[in-house]
Image 1 (cartoon, rainbow, N blue to C red):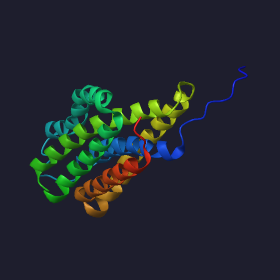
Image 2: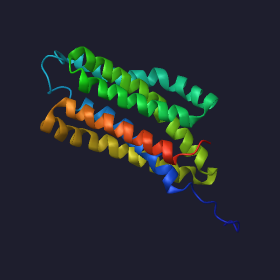
Image 3: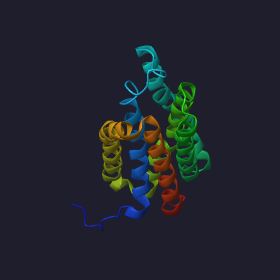
Image 4: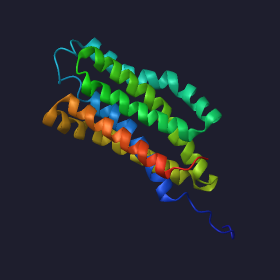
Length: 191
């Protein structure tokens, strides 16, 4: 047992927007994925088309996370986090204003690309804001909030699609991305 003083974790006011960013990417990915198949006959015409729409988001993340992670190392994680959240909100709003099958593809690609920026940046900030001795708890909390997004995405997404269609779900995601961006801009320090 160590006799040294315990090192404090980062203040909750700094961490909460990062946890919200983790929730946002998971909620966006699974909220829409779970509801694409039954919402419209004109956009999802086959299982192949459905698979393509699902792969766009995750495929963009696979390809672009290393790029945005490197960018975060070069210019700082905070600007990449904020840019990614703003881009996520914009990509979500794109489908709200341009409700057509082609724009659905563009919106999903944009959401995935944007998530590939803010997801690793949020993780980097979780690490930078917390001492090494507190990384387990900090990343556990980040993963917890992301898992809530994965869990609630299909459920709340289904309620939103039932209540107002897929456009309502995209509208909520646009508002969520914008709100988390503003919150992070106000609360997350540059480290």
